[in-house]
Image 1: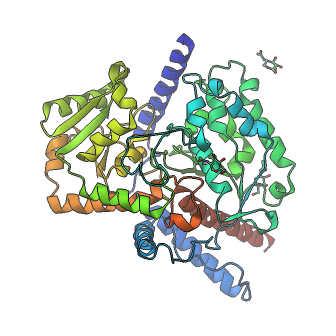
Image 2: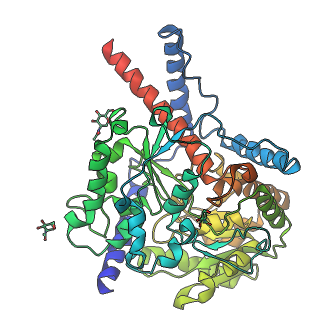
Image 3: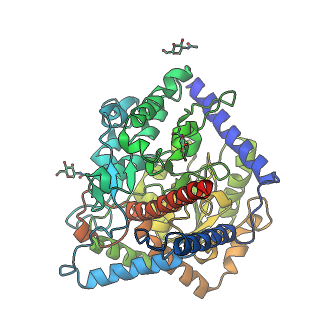
Length: 507
Ligand SMILES: *[C@@H]1O[C@H](CO)[C@@H](O)[C@H](O)[C@H]1NC(C)=O
Ligand SMILES: *[C@@H]1O[C@H](CO)[C@@H](O)[C@H](O)[C@H]1NC(C)=O
Ligand SMILES: *[C@@H]1O[C@H](CO)[C@@H](O)[C@H](O)[C@H]1NC(C)=O
């Protein structure tokens, strides 16, 4: 335990250091609109590419020009998604089953079991802090929750899902996905279902780095032997990790807080990495995916019913905070500040999580606080991101962020480009965060209504649907659908760019 404590505190103080150093660093400046540069880059790149298509390969028809780009169209993508849900709802039984849209064709590697399923046999040792056995049950959804709303419907959509288990749910969903192909020649995406997060958390206390890294190194050796890898040097390959990228980026001579070196392996840099928290500065091949919450519906009916309930939910509290004060100077500052402000306000509901308060581990208690609140404060915890952001959105509670890296720089595939449409931002160091209530009271009722509507419309794409859901009943795009589509687009762009460079170098 002693060891683990030192390791955690080193880890967090290191992340804190990175964070504050980077915040002050000269390299790191947010433009007025953080997406502007990216959009501008895409525009220039696509224009060049288009010209090249027209003048260089006039007869090429195999790669249709992508109609939409991220992140500028995310908003319309969301409204389209919710529109589709409504359509499907009205015509539920008759509607043609949503099949694969043709832009995604994903091949799933049948890895040797040591990289995934065999790890589950030792589930009691998978995490140095907790017994993971109850959490890896039901393909990673965990234990079913009773006494929740909607739990009386055909299949109970509620589970006590662990926050760091996304990789298992993702795997189970892709295995059942309508866009899965068994023919590598037809695939445009290659999924490597490695349970890297579960594995790394079982080795946090392993002192010998060779042993700690061994499985990751074996995985790469395995991939290098596959003809499917060699075709594109892994550029069309991806892994999904249920833990933050900080757990996989140990460097030689850097601080050791239990991480392995997975994301620093050269081959992994050629791949795309989906993770619940990307490194905002050195993570160009890392893409944020949501933390799993507790709701895993199998049908669009369950989703629509829940969304309707959240729209109608009575929200007597202006804001709420769920969390514990943290030890360590930097963190204590903002968290203690929130707890203090919340206690001083009659409009705030506080769920204080020190001393192992059991309510903080009870999904039903957490969701109850959130669905009674209009705004939910999201203080950074041990790292920038929090599972709580997704619990909050699921509850129709508008998230309030204090760091840009809690969501805006993380989940570009999933969130509307314009942050003010669905969230409130108060700089952690700034004055506003000293007067949270005052700032929130200034937002008009109509504005709050509009934001909440946006938040509730976002729920489907931030939800991990039940892996056994039949695609004809689901009728909405969940995390995995959105991720696969965005990834396929990303890989297409990457490969086109490579081909362009090769063509240019020939010339
Ligand atoms: C999905 O279905 C399979 C086959 O019926 C079953 O074994 C498995 O437990 C189901 N998964 C979940 C999460 O319910
Ligand atoms: C770490 O483990 C490897 C493989 O078992 C071994 O060869 C090496 O000597 C160990 N290193 C240390 C410092 O103990
Ligand atoms: C990564 O991709 C490049 C081609 O873009 C290739 O030259 C390089 O060898 C690849 N790296 C590894 C480790 O496979």
